[in-house]
Amino acid sequence: MHYSPRKEDPLFDALNPVVQGLGMSIVELSVSKQRGKTQIRLTVTKKGVVGVGDCSRVHHAIVPRLELAFPGEDLYIEVASPGIDRTIKDASEFQLYIGRGVRCYRTDISDWTAGIILEADDHHLVLRGAKGTVELSYDSIAKAKLDYSQEVED
Image (cartoon, rainbow, N blue to C red; front, side, top):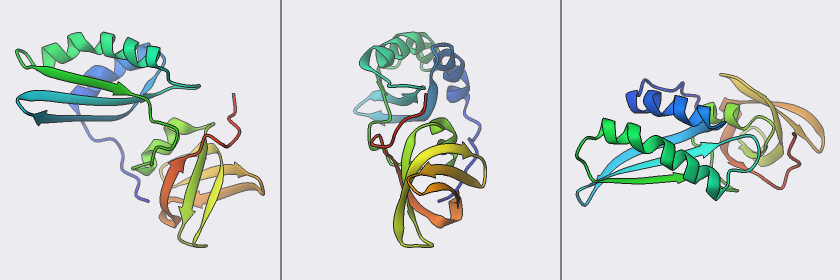
């Protein structure tokens, strides 16, 4: 799995303080044009469960900034949680999920390793699993998914 530091994105930079002010973090932000509308999709996470009320609070809080960023455009805004089995798209996401369960398909053993993320940096992550603590290099991970069946640390 590849680790990509977040690229400069003025829209992310404008929305991130608002989302963080609500106690959440942006996992993913995408903007596209569909049938004359500008679609903005935002995936957010927080410690604990992201509920419909959390998504609604984020939606209402970001609308003014989006209207400033896209003046006069017809906006479609979607705010969602990562979901119970989100596929992790970039290794940089692991830092957002410290304390959460994850399962990683490892190329070095051709099998899955599951556990709670204890640490994550630019090169590796540390999981606490059923067989103890294991350190995984991102180079050895082919794919990864959130795994809410793992015990969550508070």
